[in-house]
Image 1 (cartoon, rainbow, N blue to C red):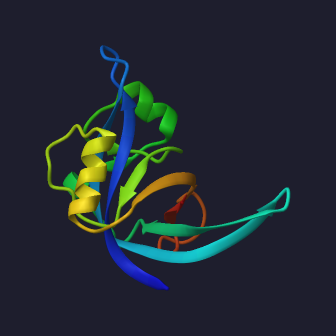
Image 2 (image 1 turned 90 degrees about the vertical axis):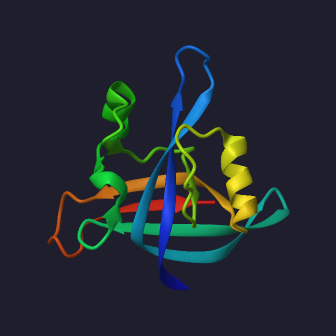
Length: 144
């Protein structure tokens, strides 16, 4: 099913002092969302899981604080609050997380439980903003 949703993207950042992951949130409104079930077999063992696809259009999506997307390597070097990125291992909630940053994974799981939604882990992403007309440019996220 394809719908438009509001998501909270949590970028993982390793705290240099505590060496623990902290997550910084970005609320994004107007995201295309598709969920399906996938079945796979490996060494005779069948597994099924939910597969998620998100597309953040460059035109039409409303990003909290007018944050700007930057590639993962630049984000890890700059770690400035006016940017967000996509990287494997980031977390997504199909809900609005209104707690102040930074979050721990336990905080995110608590918000998900309270809002009755799943914590989705980013497993793949693509920057599709380089080619094509402005109407089709987007950031694509795959998750499980």
